Image 1: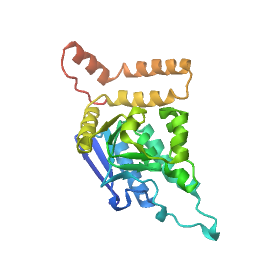
Image 2: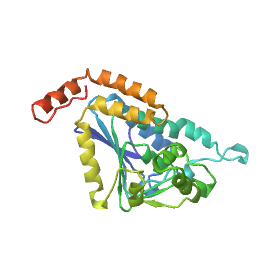
Image 3: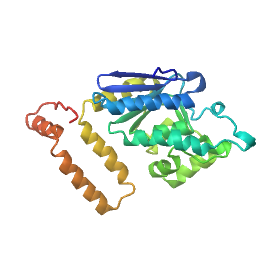
Image 4: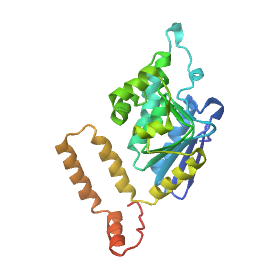
Length: 263
């Protein structure tokens, strides 16, 4: 597939996916969804890719849905937004969360609506100091989607989640870090360098172990303590037989840097 709305490259184990509609603040269209889905398929299939770095081009990360890309339904009854979520946004969120490789997000500007919640679905989120997160749905009579009603209360607490969702007020990057919504707020000029360094570090790490960490952490939100303890036991049993575990222990004993293969 030839990409027109995204940029995609792979180097040194890191796949870099850049939303590339800067004139529209990288808002999503049907075409962009298709191109992002295709790029994610390449990340999933390519065993040489061991981390994903997601960012946006220009002055914004992602303004959510491009409203001009939605046609009015016949009869003037409005648009079936559920169809858009079912076929495009929900699969995207599920794929980012389930991807068995670390996902680093570099929020370079405004992240609004679904754009904010796509960022929050990533594993490690960096944001430039100039970035803002906006749950803009209430301004057009909608509910936060793309996982917003599920992930926001878990990350920020219900009071803050409701405040963000009901008022639609922008949340700056520094406060987002203080509230635990993102990993780190950095100077604008350092954003891609800092996010890139972490993505590169993760790409050289124990990929199977990272995949298990992602899965276990999110399953823990819904599991009982007993269920989670059993899951940890099962994962440790599996990972204890991995080549990366053997290499990690050997490197520790030999006082050297481990050379993980992701196996």
